[in-house]
Structure formats: structure tokens, C-alpha cells
Length: 426
Figure 1 (tube, rainbow, N blue to C red):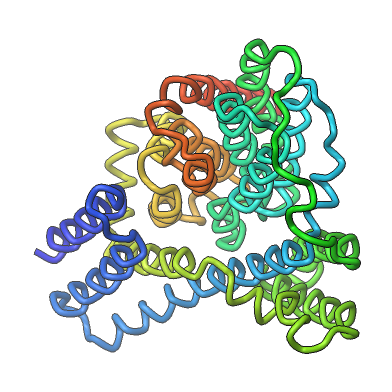
Figure 2 (figure 1 turned 120 degrees about the vertical axis):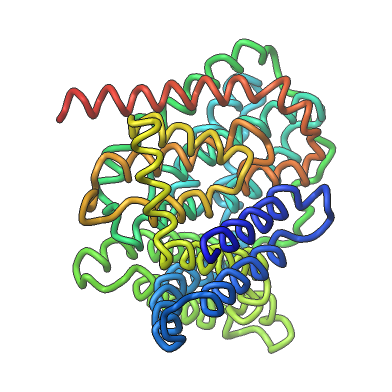
């Protein structure tokens, strides 16, 4: 009875999240209700003492809080850099008019920038740049499609680049240096295959945009400082964890404190009203709070399934019916094109035990790649895709016809690259 009702609640909640645009209910609300209801069903129907269930909830909430604090601090750092126009230091230096050259420059910058920031922020920054460079909307859609693929591929190989890779890193399934070393080549292949194919469609020079370069007003004097400090602080987090062995959220909170002080110092000559848009308080008000709450709802819902051993039973069933872990992980990656990759990865983390599959085991590395890049197959399959879809008004069917096959080819090429390299080295 308990298992059946828990599964029913979770599936209904999952469907509500997957079809949020159809039912017109934000996925954050569905996730929060699902998370609370799962634990409510557990505590009311279990034969265990309620106090023991509350202890289990506290344990899972502690693990979720590490991820949430990390995300909130990282978002605030990125918002602070953006408020000081730090990203314009990068975007203002792209001046080529050749369509193929622009495609390659844009994709490579997106790939590496996404690894340092995150795929969502990077895609927003690069599409904002595209609007200033490319006037033809149809041509700009192809560039935007490649931005989605490049941002997701770049986020997969870095502990900072995609929320699912961050979850695996914080959960100690992977280590920072190892995931970079193991996934950078497969992720690059995932980008290069569609990039080469799209290059054949790009000929001549791009049609210039009518957007004015000075549309954002006068450049902030401290933008180079804030970009350097912000990127430095984000890169410092894996180093801090390696040296101190403290959880990553401690390093990111320290980094937020440092860049907070820097922003106060470089704007100290402004009066209170002028300084307000450049403050950390303003940056914190601009972070994507609904996404943070969505992750909270999903993680506590998954925690209930883990506490009742449903995920462990699911893993055993998949191992018996499918058998091959590589096939299972590839399927999870493809499923993330339809269903949000956060609950999929959270479920996989609960299904497979660290005692059986220790830190940096093949399954975790491959899961980071597949969950990070599989979302590119459909435009709704990743946060980067949804953001670009809204900014450029890209139709679902247009992306499906023009970009999805390219993304799928890149996904499988990167997956086979990883499997081949792993087989050669192990």
C-alpha cells in the first residue's frame, strides 16, 4: 500500500512537471507539493515510529541544502558579474562578420564559458550577444541552436557547469579534476559533430543587426575587475574543497563573501541610489528563486523514494531486465530531453550505492555526460534550451526539424567516445 501510493504520488507529480506548459501550472509548485506529499504518505502509512521518519527527512534535507546553498551563491556571483557588465569584456571582442567563423568562435566560447559559469547563464549571455551581431532572425536561430548544444556540452564536464554535475560532485560520486579529465574530450566531440555539420549551411557574411552597441548605457569602470574576481572565485571552489575537504557550498559561500566585498569597494564612491544596482543585495534579489525551490521539491521527493528503498528496488529490476549499465545511462540521458534531468540524476544517485559504485566509478562519469548533454536533443530538454526558446521565440517543431538530429548525433558520438576511451584506459 505504502509503495503503491508513493509511486502514484510521484508519477502524478512528475507528469505535472513534464507537462507544465500544457496544464499551465509552474513546475516549482508541482515539485513542492510532490515532495511534501511523498513524505506525508510515508509518515502516515509506515509502521516505523514518526520520530525515525523525521530523522530520515532531516538527513535528506541536509544533503539537499548543500546543493541549494551552492546554487544560490553561484547564481548571486554570476548576477554580480553581470550587473557590472563583466561579460561584455568577452562579447565586445567578437567582431568577425564571416558566418562560419562566427559560428565556431561563438560555439567554442560558449563551450568553455559554460564550464566556468553554468549552461543557463552562458546561453543567455551568448544569445544577448547574437542579437547585437546577427540581424537575420532565421540565421540567428541556427546560431542559437548551436549555443544550446555548446552550453550543455560545456556544462557536462565541469562540476560548476551543470546542476546535475554539481549534484554528483557534492554527493561525492565524482571529483572535480577527474570529471574534467574524463569528460572534456567526449563533451568536445558532442559539440564538434553538430558544429561541423551546421558549418556547411553557413555561407558568406552575416546580416548585421540594427541593435546599437551602446544600448546598455555607459560601461562600468569595474567590469574587468569583477569579471576577473568572479571567474577566479568560481575556479577557487574546487581548489578549496580539495585542500580543506569541506563541502563545496562552504567554498562558494566564501567566494560570494569575497566578491561581495570587492563590489562594495569599487562602488564606494557612488551614492546609495547609484550603488544599489551593483550591490550583492540586488544580485540576490535577481537570482532564480523558483528554480531553487524546484530543486528542493524534487530532492525531498527523491529522498522519500530512497528512504523507502523503492529506488534500490528499481535499480535491481533495471539491472536484471536491461543488464548493461551503459545502455541504462544512455537511456537516462535521452529521457532527460523529455523529463527534467535533475530528478533523473537524483533518482540515479539513490538507485546506485556508493559502496557498490565508489567515487569516480564509470557509471557516475558517464551519467554526468549523458544527463548533461542529452537535454540538447529537444529544446525543452534543458534550462539552456528553454531560456533560448523564450528569448528567440524558437518554435518546438522548428528545433525538432533543424537541430534535434544534429544534437542526437553529437550525443551518441560523445557517448561512444567516452566508452571507447574508458575501455582503452581501463
